[in-house]
Length: 329
Image 1 (cartoon, helix red, strand yellow):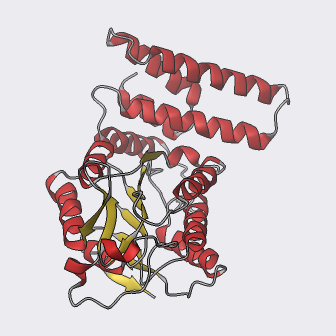
Image 2 (cartoon, rainbow, N blue to C red; image 1 turned 180 degrees about the vertical axis):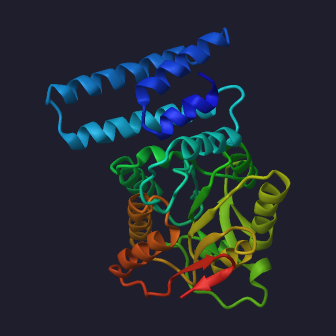
Image 3 (cartoon, rainbow, N blue to C red; image 1 turned 90 degrees about the horizontal axis):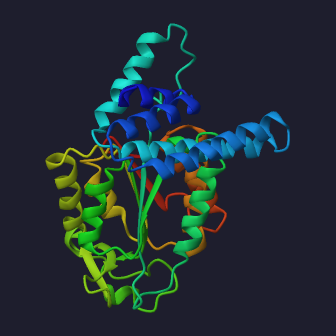
């Protein structure tokens, strides 16, 4: 089997075929670099199938474990020599050509793997945020869904500007999620207990608003202007051809960042003001709950996230959404 055949098996949930093909492909390369990881996933798969046949586990546990194995295999396959985004496209095209009885297409009709990159930053000289809790809620929502394998997550903690750029380049995500502080200046979030506090309106949001990252030496906060964030994404999308489809700024005062990126990215979410930390977590929980259930419908996910955040007394228009360059009301 070649890489396209293996990818096709993963998309069609033929895990036994995919595992066999990956083992053969790895052995053919001569170095068996991934042998131990493949043996581990093969053992998990066989054990899960046996337990299901013997009715010793619940159907929910069986499906969740199978999705976790599928996600692990997809991440492993993506690191194989010779793998590129073209492999996924060719596999999907092969499925379309050979299947004459396709069901009604879902929101994500190509069954595309929507890799999520979570970037977080909460420097020690800024107000403490519950980023671990937010990450845990998001991971749980995805892992417990029936389509967990379609949404692999990569995380980077305490990101500096250089690590921010490197993560985008290395992971090539389709969805980027930033959690942390956003404001007008670093002084504004010193000792703040939420994700921002009201400040005097600035005349130029691109230059005076931004996000708070960790300094390169890791010792303090570093304010990064909206114009810089826009340029980073512009470089990744237009120079390095990274097909980012959605960016979520779960941070205060990120309307300017969302509006700036709306020219580059089809789906962008930001906030109009400060956010209560619990409301921010509730939004993320609601967003990813429906992102997995709708298999990639960003607008439906945003709408559900807003519903959840409103239960923490956030106004309906706190989280703003830009679709294809236009703000959705």
